[in-house]
Image (tube, rainbow, N blue to C red; front, top):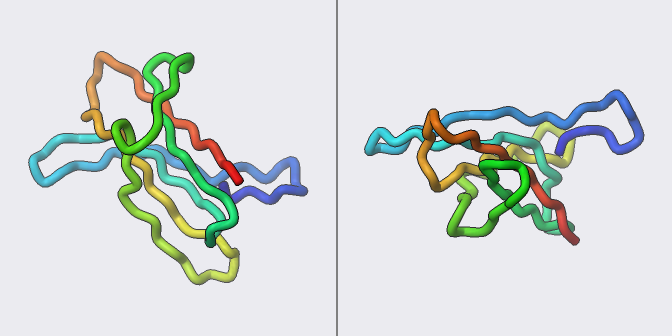
Length: 99
């Protein structure tokens, strides 16, 4: 997720975001760097309680995967919840990396 695998002080480059649809609905999202290419698969998952995690096209959507040709071999990915933001419900994201 953009951190250096051999540097313990290197932190993943992630950020939270809110995406607004044309209809005005606000959806929580996760922005992060990922390795370019198809060597691994990324699954974005969402939870409201940090115990039950749901993923897949019914729960989250890859809104944007933007290659940046900056020589790092990474790209910026944005994963958004399909459920609009609610002040009564917390939303958490995690990314599973699979080979």
